[in-house]
Image (cartoon, rainbow, N blue to C red):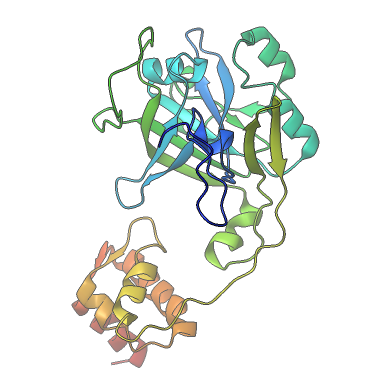
Length: 294
C-alpha cells in the first residue's frame, strides 16, 4: 500500500497506510490491559497496553503483548520474565489517570504520583520471595499472571537501530483471577463486567474511550453434522484439568443442547471423584450405569 490517498474505490475514501495504522487511519475498538511488572529495585510499576491479545487458545495458553522496546514494561519483562495483565471496569475518572501512566517520557516518580490504584501481592508469591512476582491491581475485575516464553519468536524483522531488545512477548498464562461476582458471566452468560473500549491515541493528541451497552446473545446456528464439534468445544472448556476424548464426546451428541452443560458438569464431578483426567467412552458408560443404579 503506498501513501497516495487520492485513489478512491467506489463508496470508499482510500487512506494510505502509515505508522500506527490501527489508530492513525482506522477505527479498531480494543480492550487494554494494565500491565504490572517488577523493576530492578523490586518495585511494581503499571503500564497500560492496548496491543495485548489471545495468542494460543489451547494448551499452552498464551497472550501476545506488544510494547515499545524501550518502555519500562518491556525492560522489566526481559529481565524478570514475569508480568500480570490487569483489566479494570469503565470509570471515566480512573481512565484519566490511566492515560498518565503510559505516556512516553514521564518519570517513574510522576507515574507513581498519578497512580490511583491499590496494589496487592500476587497469590503466586505466597511462601516465596514476593518481589519476584508483580503485584496485582486490587480494583481489577480480572488478572492474567504470566511468564514470558521466549522460545516462540514473533518478530517480523531485525530490531530497529538502538532498540535494547524485543518488545513482543508471548506470555504463557500461569494463573487466571476473576472477581467472584463475575464468575456467572463466564459460566452462565450473565453479569458481565463493564470493560472500557479504547479507540486509540488520535492525531490531536488525545486518548479516546467508550462505554459499551448491555451485552446480548445470539444463538449459534444449528448446522447439520456439527453436533460433535459443538460437544467437543463445550466439554473441553468447562474444567481446568478434566478433558474429554472425541469418542466420549460422540457418545453425548444425542443430549439436547439445553441440558448438555448440566450433563457435562455431572460427568466432570464424577471424574474428579474417581481421579480421572481424560474422560473416555468407558467412563461415560460407568457414569451412565451409576445414574441408572445398575
